[in-house]
Image (cartoon, rainbow, N blue to C red; front, side, top):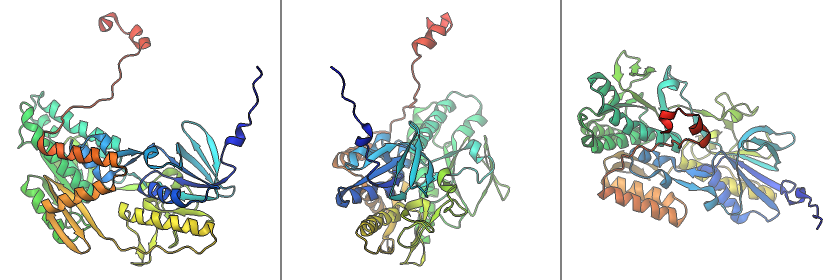
Length: 444
């Protein structure tokens, strides 16, 4: 029977009206979820992301500290978004004149748009300090968190083998650069992991396992009030974490860091939680500013463009509530996404868009050992109560009931049982081709 030719182009949707979102983080996913429910049926919604999942970055330090499993801090995009067409690709080029987006990996293709939204966030920047790019470790992605977890456990494994006391000291000292949310939470989790795991390794003691936090400002957690920052400092010092305030890193090498005041901190693992820069394809856009971010008007429209919008960390969004740019936090990104969904729908209906006007509700940060600090609507909390509030807040933010249950059970499991100190590698077994070429004594 002869096959009937089919015009595949008629099955493609890129001849229809498209809203294309670049970025699958908090901002992009929240925007897509709000548009899915209200977007007219003649419009298509695309989300372009380098991964097919959303990572809840505030929980990454818990992955480093083996408090939760890696799969519990990510949710597949296809579990959250039903109408949105998800494409796991890497954006290569934007043609504003012809209104097209070109992407590569795994395929090379172009998609037209009538409205384009940038929600790509920022990448870690390790080039601000000499040696940091070579020896420092970022904490931006799930892969970073898993690598750091293995690095901590691997250091303990090596320390229990070596008879070189100087080498053992280097291996069991960890330096965190940055005393903001990520730095404090990472330091607290690593310290808790070390204190629990050390007795299980011969010739490694709790006393020799040290965590150092280097922060350039006068107090930790500059995102909250000074009193909570001082509480965090006191709590960490009492638990044995060394805190260096008003200190700047001059250089990083394989044996530790040198500070600008001449002081030296020894440690084989340096973690950077400071410094971020825009994705390369955004920084190269003509509408990007000197730092590679996209300035917008108060309605989130990219300045000097038509039907192009931006939100989240990659954008400089003026906040009419404070008459200043919005902070690059998930809280503001989510609120911007909700407003942008309204503004896009208003544009489709030829109504005027609204300006971004939002006052922060507060901030929360876990400091380790079942302690946290919180500042909610001006009310300050610290200790176990703040830690319970921190967990309740992030549990509520995780989408889908199934993922909430998984995280809740994992958290409760960790209260009663020891942390998992398995060294999780991704090594593959030898393929048939490689095995056939291996020496006889290896093949066996």
